[in-house]
Length: 267
Image 1 (tube, one colour):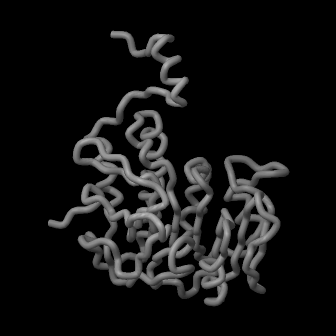
Image 2 (cartoon, helix red, strand yellow):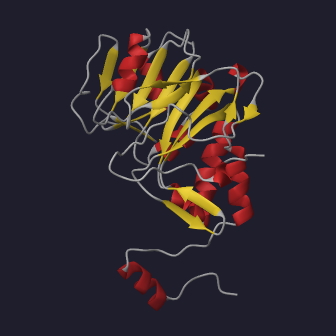
């Protein structure tokens, strides 16, 4: 059986700004979602950052974290300021802005994008941490919102560096494309890499975009996931009720987007 699409059909898809791909196996997709089911542990969740977009829930396990690394500055740096107010050195990087909108004596800004290589416009996350905080081996916090580049950054990050991040907060984009088999193959490797050392402790869909449902599996386009390093977790149990009381909508003029039940188990 041919495994390619003929040229006329491909032209029709191209005219609609689309490209066909094989559909991800439903069981494999649900298996990945099961691995990402958030757990509760002995550390309560607290909110850092703005009420709305730019605020995230993290475990109340921030003592002795030496520095926060935050690629993707955006329109505010309230999360980063909250980290700095707790005594963390805060390193920010973004090649598209001149400086953060907020300032703090503990902020250090680099006008580069974090990516898969290091040159005059980009820097790998390993090189960024090494150059920014060279004399430390202590715990770090990673908060990343870089509009889809998170996948390449995480795949390129060394295992040794990822282990240093006690808490990882990432906004993942285009997750509706998990239904595409090639995209699923890439992104599932990203999550498997994270899950070697960390466990998901919170999931909040960003209501800036919708979700895509096929059958009984619904995938929000954008989600904010919080991970805690496994050695910091005691007495874990699956979280069964969403949203968390501290969750707020990212976009106020759009309907709320609850976490679909296929992402967690109420049993």
